[in-house]
Length: 383
Ligand code: V47
Image (tube, rainbow, N blue to C red; front, top):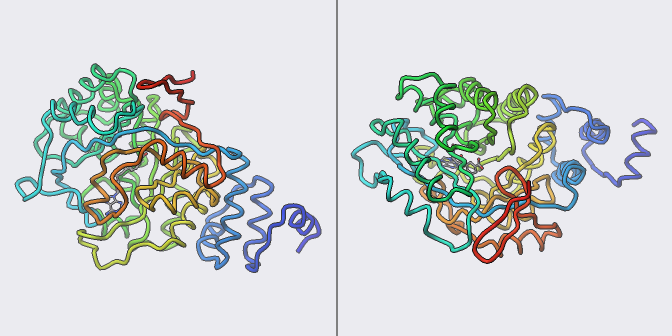
């Protein structure tokens, strides 16, 4: 070990019994970019506390003690879906039992119901419906904007954008422009799953491939729409597939700077065609957050989505690289259809308590990470 590294370790009390982590620790300290092999080493290291320590160092460098949350509402307009992804328990084929499609009035009413706290964001994700026209989705967004002009609309994954563009017989940039004109303010990160073809063929072979997802994100960013990025882990992927996914996101982010947040999504197997796969463990959930923080040096935010990993794990993640735990959600369908046992939503005060008890400072953000100030039944966003 070089003397400068040992001096640094003493100063920062980094300790590990995994010698393979030492050169990575030196790079992290110097703000150097980590390589593919570093990523694989981080995934395979037995010293999860050391990996978490490094991720926490980066997280505190970027955000200090702040932990972000928001007051949001999910709306899933339809669960009818042509894709038949093996990873999914939410989507159903047209005509199958349990399908639903909201009439526009119903979607707007849904937006208004639930907790009384004024939401700052509608998160809209749904199935790939074979019959709903492009204009249904534009009317949905326009109607929300008229009724809730202050609420940010984060709508349509890259998979939905590509599908709707094809259905509407337009190019993806055209579809994105029309979505933006209708009132879409940014886009959620879903549908990314794992980019590697081998994995995608097993878990979701009927939708766009990894490079189409990345191209669509790039096009969204180029017209000024910010988006999130996800990665679905804990199914048939291996460590190399995960690192490959992270590096592909990092490369697009270098080009566009358009990703706001990275959100690892733990696979929920119940009621899916992959129900034989065991649920993820706490160690994998924490490791995923930490490796994401360390590899994605050009992403500002890493979200530990409490619905996915449980409120308790999201809280601990705030010490393993995460700076965001997502929002109140109010009504969640995708993971609950796949066996999630978390509550459907949480109150603002519960999120504040989780963060405070983790020793972090709660920061209510809007979707663009601007500070939100509240009065009784309204809010103001700092500009
Ligand atoms: O794309 C589907 C995932 C995603 C399962 O951008 C599953 O802030 C686990 O996009 N087990 C949709 N995951 C959700 C999504 C999202 C969620 C939270 C925050 C944000 C954001 C975006 O849900 C899908 C897919 O990757 N998913 N089925 C399942 N069984």
